[in-house]
Length: 377
Ligand code: AMP
Image (tube, rainbow, N blue to C red; front, top):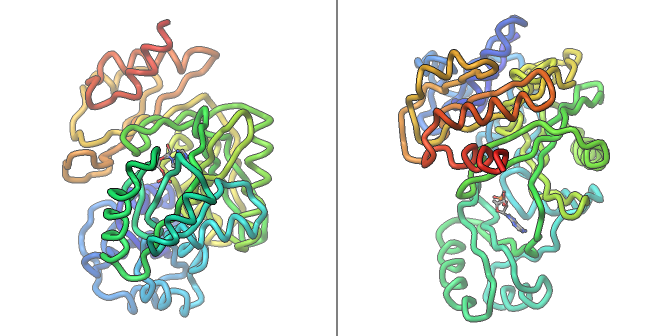
């Protein structure tokens, strides 16, 4: 099988690594350069999308901000999964909110803003404090504002008006502020036959809007809620592939924050912690193969490596620690790799995370240091 992935980043790279044992070969379309590249080496192996589409058995995507003309060409080939509709919903908060409402899935109260009058009405309808997010192009907390009091309205409007003017079809989604206790996510797969297999929930910690620590958790009541919402969204899209739902946990009630129609950073722990990792399950789903088991095989957490391109070698000799580099050039804040940390028995994972924190720089890895500090108390 040959799978063409739209996007040539770390998610295509990890699909390639997971696909090899099943004889699933991956090539990646670099949307910026227009080249077809090898997902591991980034070597150019072809030019132009049309040829690559012809040679692919299946086409899928590793990110949702894909220019629509590219999506349309892929959709026309009849080989594209999950679907143009799912990718567009993941990349446009207006479509995402409408999708959640139609699927009957709880999410924060919201209003769409394109004019100053809309903003005034949104403040009345949604109330303060509120979170304002650009409908297109914003991710990892970018393109967002927090409105806490009336004195901020003029200044925030100036910035939002600029954002709306700067790109076509842009708008702002105003959302009620959710005073959640924690953020969790559910990653799962739906096969071509409609079979659904979801992983255990992951609890996620963000640093400056970017995921920094993700830990698989066992919480049967939350898991049940999350699974129901996952099925509702996946079925309403007739989804095929891996899909991630991010939630706010508000007093034991989950609200969906956003969806990602692809393999997801909060599912990287599955590489060491689950029977079948998310990358393999995505490929199995889009290739029409049976899904692999999603059960936890050992307690696992994932630590993102942000903006760093070296780590102490000592980590390689620490039990349960597995480093995954993405082969990318160093840039401040960039996702450069991750470390999966596993523990075999109760409390072992936590102790291993503390041991790892002790060899990692506190400024570069604040979330794991915060965890170790709390654990020591
Ligand atoms: P997002 O890009 O939508 O994932 O937002 C980035 C981060 O902002 C989330 O991970 C939350 O920590 C926070 N956030 C987003 N929306 C809300 C909301 N409605 N209420 C409270 N916090 C939010």
